[in-house]
Length: 416
Ligand SMILES: Cc1cc2nc3c(=O)[nH]c(=O)nc-3n(C[C@H](O)[C@H](O)[C@H](O)COP(=O)(O)OP(=O)(O)OC[C@H]3O[C@@H](n4cnc5c(N)ncnc54)[C@H](O)[C@@H]3O)c2cc1C
Image (cartoon, rainbow, N blue to C red; front, side, top):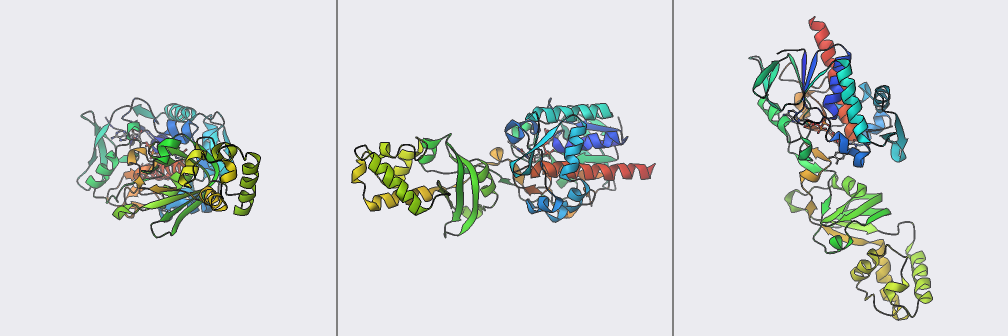
């Protein structure tokens, strides 16, 4: 069997590329190993799909960790606003929320995947649910097709859109790296990024499920140097800490060589120590005959208060009127710097994205084509490109997919 182009992987980037190619009249066949297309796309943004960020290309590039330079053509060639227009045109109305985060109005990630799949089919793309096991290269090293379920499918254009290594249950288990290496491309070390952080401290299981809003998280290394500081939301898990602030912080940390960090949480960032002292005094005086833990009720979420007193080395069963000035100071210090020691990141299985991948030095960043294999393209998370939370990673998938589709269409037209 043969066609113009084959796409390997039916996630965000593969579906988007297939749609762009099919609507340009290219005979495209997309292979997805799962029975369902866009399995990871369907769980993005906690099921709401933060599909992009409504920002300028310059702002977009400011939010990219790796591959800033390699992404210039892709982002200027297909901006977040272009993606929003494309998705609206296929029946996904979008809305912009805090921090320019873009979501479908339906707040349902399944809509995005289903509409994209429909758009592909309507435009004439053939969608096949088989796992690709090999990429066929001809004697010059050029793309010649793929093998899936023991059958050869021939095409002069093959696009690898197999994703990274995170959340492998969604189908991204790293096949694309093997394909790249077989085609002579280098693959950089793959590490978890945007990942929960682990801690051995008992306060974490004790506070499991507690979500904190409007806190300041500062992460310091063992020498006390600040590695990250941000304001927002985080949560405790049975094995450590997670949530938007923590995921973002994780991308700034390097755990190689066994490095350890401290997460320092300012639970009352909008209040000065003097204001806190006045508030504590008032609460302790109002409840002078109560136990401290009861007198301070309302200062913090109920589960957090005893844990905080424990960290501040205060016996919560003391009478409020017996709390010394030094003890009060200790409570304030802990409120402004609730410290959790971090032992490492969670595994890549739990990471939102994979840092590292196909080395961009082997890819033409104006077309996404391998410099070694004419007709072999790489798009999306399989590449060594990654960005912050906020829609930037899906935008990488859309923009690289669009760039490849544009180059492939031009290439096939030229060949006619
Ligand atoms: C929990 C979670 C939430 C996220 N939320 C957001 C968010 O809100 N906003 C955001 O910007 N980013 C988010 N991301 C990141 C985003 O999902 C990825 O960056 C994006 O999906 C990458 O797209 P992709 O097409 O490169 O890879 P994927 O979406 O992973 O797609 C790859 C596809 O290739 C298929 N495949 C792999 N190997 C083969 C093979 N050999 N043959 C056939 N098919 C194969 C896989 O089954 C998979 O369907 C989130 C990630 C996770 C894990």
